[in-house]
Amino acid sequence: MSYYLIRMGEGSKYIEEGCTNNFIAIGWNEISNIKDLGSTEAIKNELSKTSYKYSPSQIAAQAGQLSRFALEMANGDFVISPKGGGKYVVGVIGDYYFENDPQGICKYKHRRKIEWKKSILKEDMSTNLAYAMGATLTIYSLNKYSKELDSLISGDVYTPADKPQRIRDLVREGLYELNGKEFEEFVRHLLEIIGFQAETTQYVGDNGIDVNGILDAEGLANVVLRIQVKRVRGSISNQQVLALRGTLKQEEHGCFITLSSFTSSAIEEAHSIGKVPIKLIDGEDLSVIVLKHYEEIDDRYKEIFGIRRKKDFNIEDQFETNTYQEDEIQNKVFFDKNKRSNYKWDTLLCAAKDDGFKEAFLEKKSWWAVRLSSKAIPLIKYIAMYQVAPVSKITYYGKVSAIKPFKESNKYIIYLEGEPIKLKNPVPLGKNRYLKPQGPKYTELNKILISKSLDDLFNK
Image 1 (cartoon, rainbow, N blue to C red):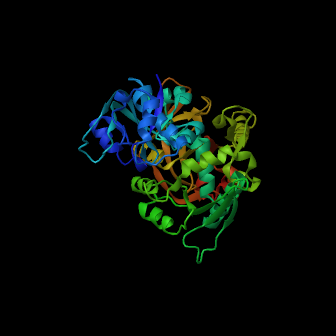
Image 2 (image 1 turned 180 degrees about the vertical axis):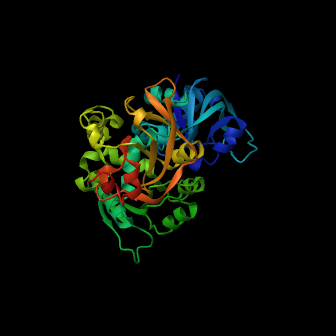
Image 3 (image 1 turned 135 degrees about the vertical axis):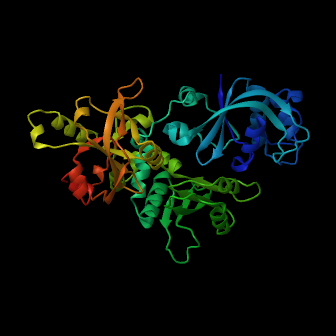
């Protein structure tokens, strides 16, 4: 069994039709039925007769894509196809067929039947797999990630309590703590690490361009990159992509970087055939790039991420939170009978992303898959929630009614008694960025109610 990434049209604009009618399709309509051609060499010969005007190397590359789709991929192989917004649909592939007269919006003639199974999210993927999903080829082998894909397809994903601990989330949260100009400076710094000569622009008269970069390809050519940077929560629209393209001169390349995401129409516009392509980098993609180049990043930026590299081989496993040691010390003090009288902990403080916070804590009045020591359970009377960046505050708490084992694991589910209670004075992150909760922390409700920041709450 093999796994393939297949992009169905610019910006995946035909994937909805493919999902509705159970097919996956690719272009090159001037090439006839590939089954009749029968080989990669025959496909090359056909491509040389088309109007595509490919160079010999391009003919070889495109023939390889067509051959893989119709001749190499086997019935029963898995296909992963992007839908936009970090969502991917997964299906099991069937027979190849040539649709001579396509009737729908999608006019691609080379098709394969498919049985769609489920959807998966980029945010649930490892850094390495998420990076691979950025491949620009129409068809790309994902066999290297088969074990992880098997796990995702079977439904083994993060729970609401686990998600804030993901390393990419911590990177993204740290970047949200920068203001707009600081974020632009960070992007400039990252470009220089990659190999560009970069500079930020002035706010007045820059035509919307925030960072300029020039890559000297060993004296053979200069690649000029114009970048627009948006530190926002809302999705970037196609109109914003169009505006960026309108600022570009001939031979200049455009890039849009945001901590949020792009609408499906923005993705389609960025990859429109016949137009200057715009590279789109969302918050997930940017976090991946940061981890890839982490060692070269300036220490002043590393401090905001709250992570450190471990000795390991896999990129995602090379990092852990900087608060781990501090939490361990806190827990040891908490469970030391000789020292416990000095503390009055009664509250578990947990970190929450927006989706898990709303779905689990506010709507279902519970919080699950929490790692706890069994010794702590009788002492926990309340649970408080720290909403991660860009909120970066303790905003709610609730009285605990019960704590029970969560499924067949060493984790627990915490149930609330009554409705969650909104703090009149939310407790923001203070000057010490390392105090932002990433794993569960123990504290006192009374201290939360009077603290002006996490610095006050933890006496830092």
